[in-house]
Length: 164
Image (cartoon, rainbow, N blue to C red; front, side, top):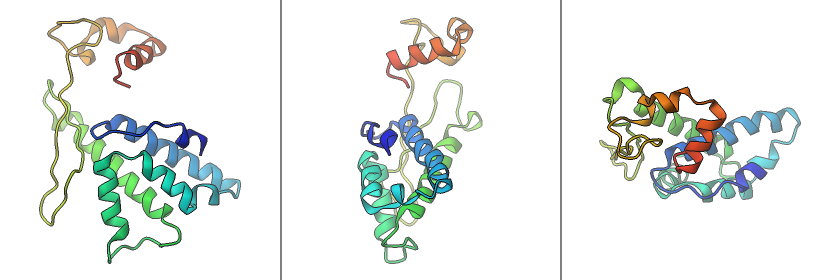
């Protein structure tokens, strides 16, 4: 729960941060369950803490799902439904970002703003050029200097530039 509480609220379009939150929840739950402490994360107040971290568009989608008359979520324990919802969100983001579905210049990030019976609106984030070279005509993923750096150094660069 500390890792969740220490996570800053996520804004719309920050799909990498949303995936980080989903991973924290997904990775933490089995450990708590093994220790017999799953109630630490499945309480209404814990679910509420997680919900507050969500970007507005995802929070709205979750609220529609959780409050629907046809909702299968347990009103006293929404955590299993929230976890399933998170895994579906993660899968949708990863599917949208797969290299095969994007040209080499644009990386798509899907975020759900409104959903009606037929259509899910998506918007796309177009990354700036290389994080290492200002004014370059190549992206960071194509930068030889960036790719040659150690993992620790690339993480530092990503954090410094606000991309991670």
